Image (tube, rainbow, N blue to C red; front, side, top):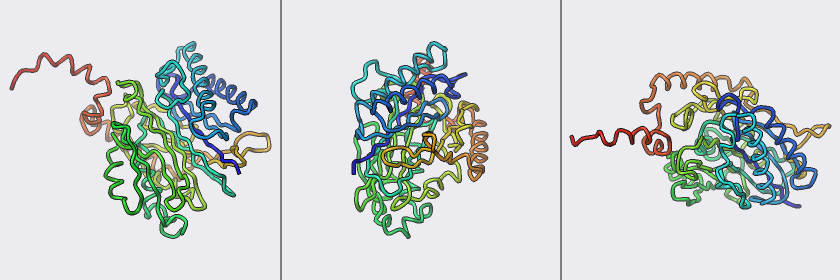
Amino acid sequence: MAKTTVSLIKADIGSLAGHIVVPPPLFNIANEKLEDAKRSGVINSFLVFNAGDDLELLMTHDRGENSPEVHGLAWETFKAAADKAKKLKLYGAGQDLLKDAFSGNVRGMGPGVAEMEFKERGSDPIVVFAADKTEPAAFNYMLYKVFADPFNTAGLVIDPKMSGGFEFEVLDALQNKTVRLKTPEESYHLIALIGTTERYMVSKIWRAEDKEIAAASSTTKLSLIAGQYVGKDDPVCLVRSQSGFPAMGEITMPFLHSYLVAGWMRGSHWGPFMPVGLKDSKCTVFDGPPRIVALGIQISNGMIASDDEGHPMFADIFADPAFDMARREALELAAALRRMGEFEPARLGPEAMEYTTLPLVLKKLEARFKEA
């Protein structure tokens, strides 16, 4: 049986009233472009949605990861939407399109990418995560809990297909190098790395016993591409579920509570990760708090399973009131952090701030410093 590829590619190409939400005209362009590509056979199925001010393109196809045709489709879609955003004078129009010429792959050009290729099982559920106002390492804690913490994931203890553990690929964003670590044997080494979220991030996860792909997340660091602050990275992540992988409820369990991630206002602050349904995926208070949406889908014969009218079906997971406590905690944490103003630890540390606009302010003071 041929393999199926699931590609999730996102970009901030313009938003309504600041960094709040993607407006309908941009959705319309994306849907038209992807519908044309579906008719021509470039992709098998698609779903367009948003996480805050980021336009998300979820596509299935049989062309494998890093396909020039699929990445080219995403690039042209983002460019067309950015052109419309510029005509409407939307905020941040084309913000994530950092390069001019497409070179066969959008990696390193601004958009974030999470992809996985696999042979379909009898039933293949996937959780599609998309975040706004944060960085790729925001998924580190979640992915560790889901794939390495038996207090979160009962399957690590009682499912023989999972008890052999998982392999994590970790990217060192500063050195552009990766390392693979196996859990549970190397759990402490794994935490030693991914606990430093400023530098290390989980990029892929495989089931250890058969190297079957389990999860993939984007690792785009816009500041490292541009050499300066040009916006938040706003990562995406795909996680396979059930039948030898963590159950749907184990994947969502880390969001029973909120936790802190880097980003928020001007990419310069710690903020609480707030799980929300699609209707609440808009960032308002201090450009946040950082939001994350989760869509549950089924892959069926190379496509996103659809209803009788051909519309892709999905479960808007975080719309569930079961996550109300996390949302309440997020707002309480947001209020506590904002009382700190621009004092650490509410503001990020000096290394992270090097890529923001703060150095431009400090440069004005350089000549005024005298020997103590």
